[in-house]
Amino acid sequence: MVGGLLPAGTTLPPLPHLLVVLLATGGVALALRRRRPRVTGRRVLALAPWMALGSAAHVLYVVDALPPLLAPFAGSPTVYLTVGALAGAAWLAADAARPDRVAATLAGAGAVLLVPVVAVAVGTGISLAGARWSALALALTVPIAGAAWVGLTRLRPETAVTGGVGALAVFGHALDGVSTAVGTTQLGFGERTPVSRILLEIEGLPSVPVLGEGWLFLLVKLAVASAVVWLFAAYVREDPAEGYLLLGFVAAMGLGPAAHNLLLFSVAA
Image (cartoon, rainbow, N blue to C red; front, side, top):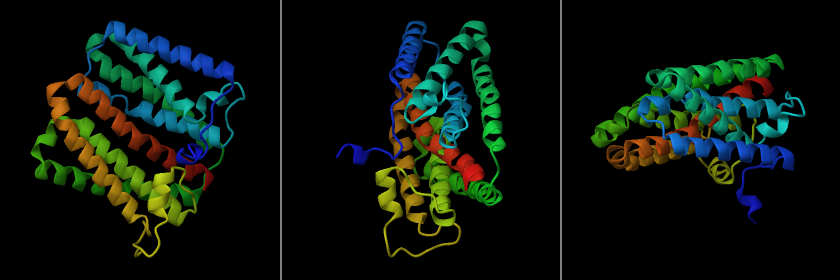
């Protein structure tokens, strides 16, 4: 029964790989706890390329483009620990080397790793139809997320304190909603998460251009993301370090799957 509640494709790597990931993650977490680098909104925003990196690496896993030795590190959910350990190590290194430029260094390091991973994925082959729909999904998301953010901050002005991290959370979940709707409606992809699949399989909904019947899924994603950002506003105000970190995790839960969708559609549709 529990297996039915987990996303399809959830697997654990072989024991040696699992031990490496757990030891690395534990070691980095311990080092972060000891050093306690300063957490700001800009530094959490700098993790955005790392959120996309995990998704891009998992696409390589899905299309079988990784060497056998590395592939288990990019399975789901192991890839989250793998990239989390790398990002944490990069944060520690940046904080030790240039404490005044942590955000820029962290974002740059993530981008430097992300570009070749995306290049390898694209090198496996491009689906022109998938790439067009991915571009359309991204273009459509920008005004939708912008309108949602403006509406949220006007309806609940206190949410403005979450700044760029709050906006990233709304954008990430909007992009996940749009790309998922496009993928299931226009490209025939299935949804792996059970709860999301229930929303996408509701019958009798009117169809709209581009999103098809997936517009309900998008609305739910926007409503939930906006509500979470609003609830976190007080947390960010009272304890910015923990508030920004947790809100960054919320953003990653949207931006990560969205980036995965866009890249996967572009190479495998």
